[in-house]
Image (cartoon, rainbow, N blue to C red; front, side, top):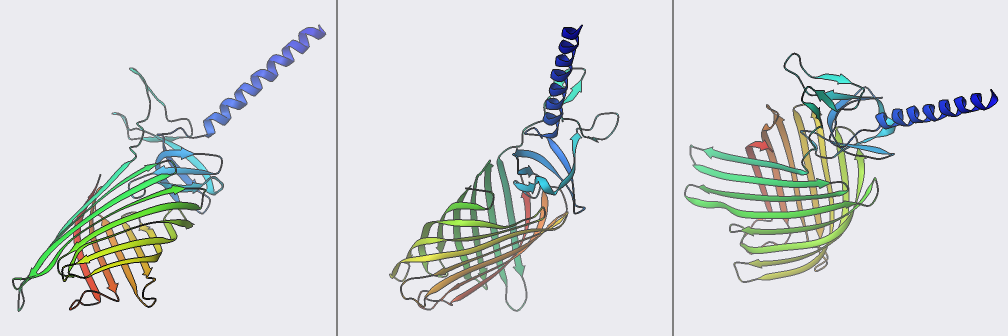
Length: 325
């Protein structure tokens, strides 16, 4: 009788541990799940699970491909199941594995690729006629701790038949997170600008970054590193410089359909010591559709030692229609 009781107690203990392990397994999100998070501060966000560990949860949604949320900030998590023919989608606290008559359907994993294409035409008719055509293409890749963003911009315009814009600029930036806050990066940029007499300018340099703010709707990064710059001008002059790169970038999701993006790059050159270059950009984006947006941006570039006859400051205003994919 005693042996039978011990055997039964052992079976109950094993069963209890198994159920406990299954319960813990249900609490962790599977890669590719669509979650709705209720945060302790009252916010409610949703997205597809990219990665989860014992400290943070990374989601991907329409406005941020790598949205990081601390687990300590989550009050409740709900799993969104796809809509059926009978009713809309539902929220449940069970895993997002959908059972149907045809079998079990696993959620589709999110693509690590993100794209954004913007096009615009600015026309003016009156005392002075002007036209400016511009396009911008961004392609990003996010996989775990690794991120890469390629950015290509083209602009061409005339005022009263005189060329006022003909430039092509492309950049490639790669990041790798060393920890939750610290990351390393490498930045490569190339530019052709006929109006500013730049036949070719390229710069490259590594650096260190810090995620200063990582809120659900606000991301602010600080970066510092070195940069080598080589510039060849149409007037026959040439510049080679080493400089420091100090940068700041921000993304603020003001509302569900309204986003503010801002960045500042400051390059103090080593020779001469009072020489520097600044690039500041701000964009306001209104998403009137899940993938379509109306964008207004301001770009200001200041170079203390430009080519002869070229203004130090170059202010550009752009209005574009964008599509994300």
